[in-house]
Amino acid sequence: QVQLVESGGGLVQAGGSLRLSCAASLSIFSINVMGWYRQAPGKQRDLVARMPRSGSTNYADSVKGRFTISRDNAKNTVYLQMNSLQPEDTAVYYCNAIYRGNDYWGQGTQVTVSS
Image 1: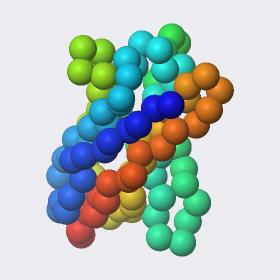
Image 2 (image 1 turned 30 degrees about the horizontal axis):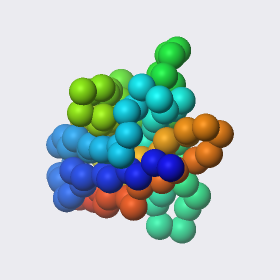
Image 3 (image 1 turned 180 degrees about the horizontal axis):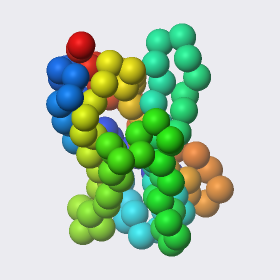
Image 4 (image 1 turned 30 degrees about the vertical axis):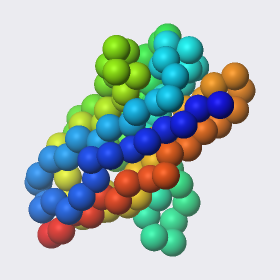
């Protein structure tokens, strides 16, 4: 089983930046895929970025060139650097891990972008 704890959300003005962190309870070397999703009010949860253990990362078209997913293996932490934030990026952001065929989710962190 994997526990995921997100942090770093908050309120920011349009054009600003935030960095989200997701700390995993076990070595991220052993996790097949780490990713970030987001869910705006009244909408479904959508992929933002994902990072397989091997292979290339994937980004939603809406965040390409603005968001970057990265990892610190020593800290078992995955990050989401978000630049040039826009009001439409407002959502609850969730960390996701796929481990041994199962999906695990963090509790979510709120990101609010004011215009």
